[in-house]
Length: 127
Image (cartoon, rainbow, N blue to C red; front, side, top):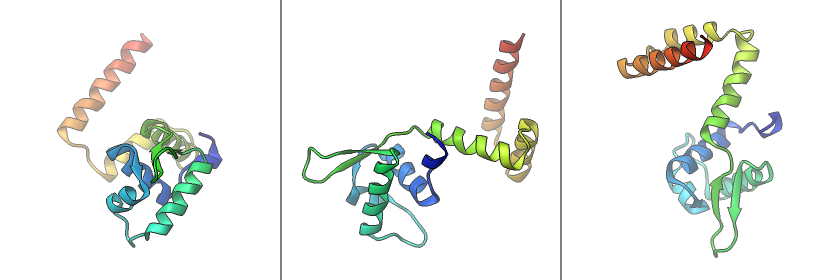
């Protein structure tokens, strides 16, 4: 996924629907989509067509109603956005990004345990 393929906010909303619900028709995406302001059916259809051209989704044309599925994983998109944010806003400082993220929205005990596990794993690999 190159810079040109980074999803817009509206495209990201659609990808979240596809990641959560799996392959969907345009109507199903439209029904699951929670957006403010609400998007019309034809807007969702046009967005999916653009996303297909950008290779963010795949379209199965075998059935009468085309079915769309995500062509990129949530991890791939998250990493792309995070790398962009790290480069642009934090001068490639991972520690600054993490500290600001934790200050902006404190992590739950469960999330902190997962962060500690990941840090232990990373430290174990570097020894």
